[in-house]
Length: 335
Image (cartoon, rainbow, N blue to C red; front, side, top):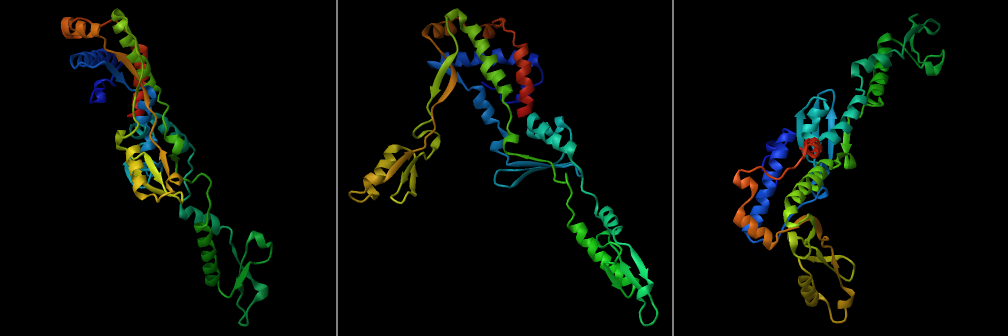
């Protein structure tokens, strides 16, 4: 029931309120034409789960100095590297509004690490060089002391030449620059729960807008939106949900159906040991979805009289403006 391009309905509340009745009635009409007994659609939670960024992205990092957004999949492979302004709307185009807000908060608090040149000047100031006349060498030349606050009034080291003292300082400063720890210099990054979105947009559309419209439409037949369950159990979705566990507790082999696992157990277990093997069922639970019944009265009416939308008559009165605003605001987060 969802149009192939989100742009067909995400531009305005007017667009969504126009699209929603048309697509909904088209779905009802198709169900009647093909003799289906029910028409169902997913819940807001299921749609939010579908668009959850954390299923596809492991972490997102932003470099404020280069204005560069980088994203990695859950296995650590880089999947995005783009120049993006540190603006919530721009970041939201790539990762959704809520994760973008969390990343933007970190960007605001980011303190770039000082340049190596700045650090060098800062640390070099800690090592003044002074002549030490009291320690002249045999030729009467002064020695040079490298001083540091940690050593009080005594030099940290003394040297025969100023050049040797400078080389010593260079080595000390180079080590200090390389070892510099700067609070706030970590690049802004979000991962895990920070990548999840609330899904309010999905609830507004799938749990409120669509059911509200359909309830108004079905009123003349005494119908109402209810709940049904779609099986995602044995053999569904191609999952190998039935695990055959050997005597040592290790997985021997997974199977699509319990019968396949039981057949394998008969072929591999030694006499008397079969009871110590296990078949563990990891199949998912059935999913609850929104649903309406397509009654014989509905089918007869739809096939004989048609629907308002197909007869160029205004569809049932439906004020979806407020719900549309909620859905559109969240839809842009998920885009």
